[in-house]
Image (tube, rainbow, N blue to C red):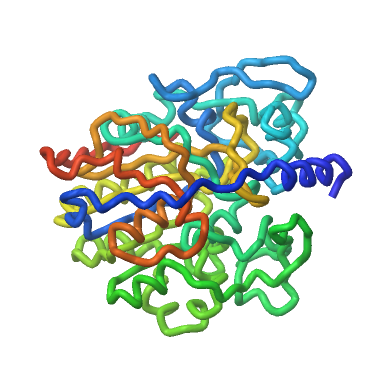
Length: 408
């Protein structure tokens, strides 16, 4: 690690803010109507990159550089030749102690003479995401749980922790327990000391809590050997990866349409896609990725499960793209830069902007509160509730089936 990154890391440890007292709202009247929570997790976009021009939201159309200049955020291409760096160190450089002016310093920020990470999409490029935001709920203070990339953030979505991992593992293919004993991932202990560990953990997850409560869960991802399987978080949880539920509950993404059509929807479902449909900047582009999300949401809206469902859509890390809001520092791991988060449900308030400080552990907490599960870590315990974004007693919102785009 460079001296610059080391200094930033040390500064980060020093500036950690002690978390607020646990916030646990009483379950609102009518919230027990929710029987299904679906979490769709896509790849690598900040709030300003996707929703920086959304009316009423805390967005920006310009970005700060490390030399004090401010430049406009340029037009975003559907497909990037190479994604900018978004490691733990890249995030610390970009955040620069809260000044949010170091995005031009991160790896591969400048390509072909252009700062590709100082770009943003507009409504006509991702119109269906904007339609969801306009008709349901958009959160503009939703941060990644940890500085940096996919692997640790995906773990937060199932366990409100990453086992102290802070970067992606040093292997290709899968990123979990089946990588062999020699695989390693960079980690950070609570005091700020760095070390390496195997990317295979045995901490408790939401799945374990659901099992104990007699409730159901599913995790959909590409199968092993297919690009995108690396994002299957339960591959990194030893007792799931080598237990009987690996074959029954961790399912191929191709099974989703049939399962929804048959009404076979679990109480909690996580969904990740293959790389082509993930919206990863250098893989399949945003158009095809948005279409894949719309297909899943349409299927749920057309099913009987819609009347009892909440769908969360978010992006797993900042991808190296600019965002102007300094993430609060709740511990040495994060929070990381903002990403968008959408809440789609018949109970979602229409056109509501959620301004509370949230992160992936907040969605874990929502699952726990709705189904009466125990909190797993300090992160979900201390996270804010999201019940302000819902109306469980008014007239439910009807389905809003959208038409996928024709991608160029």
